[in-house]
Amino acid sequence: MKTRLGIFLIAILALPYLGLMLAGIEWHDLKIRVLLGDPNIVNPPATLLTTLMMAGYLLFINHMNKLITGQQPFKNQTSFLLWVGAAGAVMVWLLSYMNLYAATWANQPGNPVMQALLYTPLFALLVPAVMFTRAFIAALPNVLKMMTTNRTFTPPQATALSYFFFALAGLGLLGGAIWHTQLILLFWIAPLLLLAGLQLLWSESTIFSGLKTGDNARLICAGLSGIIAGNFAMFAYRSNGGLLLIDSQLIQQFGLFLFGLMSMQLVDVITEGWRGKKRSDLYTKKKFPIPIVVKNK
Image (cartoon, rainbow, N blue to C red; front, side, top):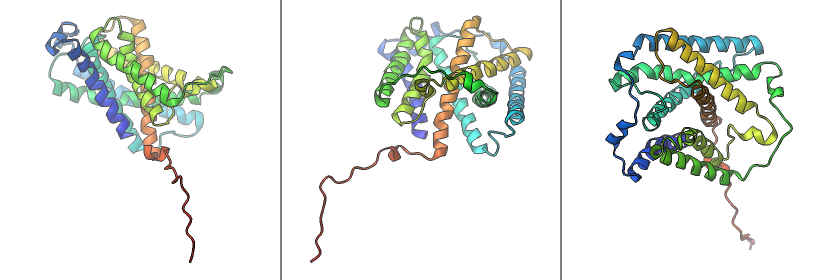
């Protein structure tokens, strides 16, 4: 788990910058394309109140899960939830870092230390919010059944598919930093492809695994969870006086759908660590090919 998360972190940080170097673009030249917001619109009270509302959202969804299923899916899993929150906060900060290259939304100038202290608690709640929402949607009557079809297919071999995902992710992260207009879609899909490729390389399931058997529930529920939790977070921020600088509703909703997929794929990676499965356990050692016979004298 830690190895996969480390590779993911290094790749997201390094590849876009490497793309700039290969294109001969200096870091200070990147400021030309970066959208900077007005420092006056940074609203610490709105951020803090949104954090409190997201915490209330988690408690509410967890309670709704208990009402429907009679159980609390994440009860007595404090350590796991802390890992999910910490990894989720890092992932959202990585997305903010990627936005320096893509300029999809306006970045907030100002004291980075203050921003880290202000936004990190909020970012740490986003992925758990998606996870709780996904559990709630999946627990609704007949939802999983309705999302299952008879259409099946045989995917390529896991190793080959992982290399294909890595190639697309590398192209998106390298090329998207250079041609941020032409490759903007692939640039933002690249983190999901990278996580999925790492899962396949470790012989684990991905967010897309159910498609081969006609089970679309994981994919659809994850995307819907991202939209629901993300829209609640934006509503909470706006209702508390905050200002979001993304004009296109289509971009917003697609981004939230994609964030839901990335969140659940990240949760899958962390879950494998709780199963205690190591990469060395996936490959059994081959027996010595020549039998040795010992005769007793």
